[in-house]
Length: 369
Image (cartoon, rainbow, N blue to C red; front, side, top):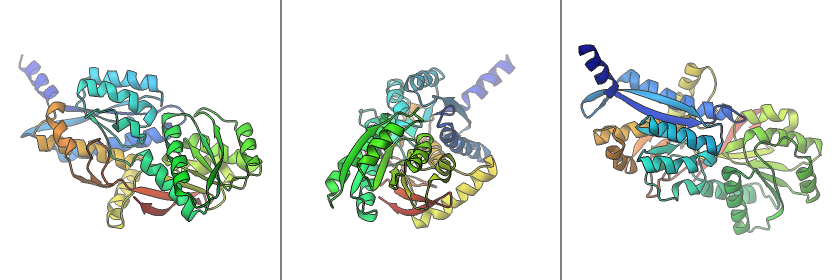
């Protein structure tokens, strides 16, 4: 009996955090990056010891794969609810995060996405939904301003992959190009899918419109091959996109099809100069732990875990119903800056980083709001 009581006590001392990303399929490398960031935070919390309300806990990460598929995303979300997780970090992309958020809301489980950027996610009225990166309205507006002002683009073609992320970002970009004026116009608009590999027909149609810039709303797994085919067709335009194609995988996937400075992308995050050392230290620790470099959103997944734990400590309880109000009011200083949320659950003062590629390597251009 004593042994059974001890086991029950140990079970009560566990806090289970769910993490969901696409760790299989075309964007598995990005999903694993998110998961690694979350796992790094969990390991650090356990190494230093976690005390909440005077009680010692062990943090466990329950990592699940939604393969970037909305149906699988909701299945996994229900699995985490049934497992009675105390909170969820994820999902990775907007197409799975949005439908999953209803399931977490119904169960009263707080959710922080470190990478889903579609505005719909935090506009459904769910008080359990948060994100610690900028949304597509901010991202699309920033990219449009940069294209028209810094890039001097006049004739712009747009391609999107019809996902919640790709369409949402492209719509915001188009809206803001039209608003910016400066003689810029959308001369062509084409569509593809996140599974496509042949872009001959849409690129041929775009070539006829003679764009000086092509904007792509989609992921790096599609952007790389698209750049290859642009070169084959002799399309000399600059190529721009959002965070989904802003990884070091783009040069690898595109091969020799990228000219220095041709590709411009923005990441829905970024740190000010005074925070750079913290980010550099994180990247070094990440490489030491996993033997690879950070791709995109690992620091945001890391901060999301620590922000959630901070809220539990402030509330004195890991019970979702108890710590949720503290999470809504949190001000957690992380490696990505201040993690604090507005009334909708969007990050306050979200930063954006503009990048380009030179010599096959991603280079930061500037950090903006």
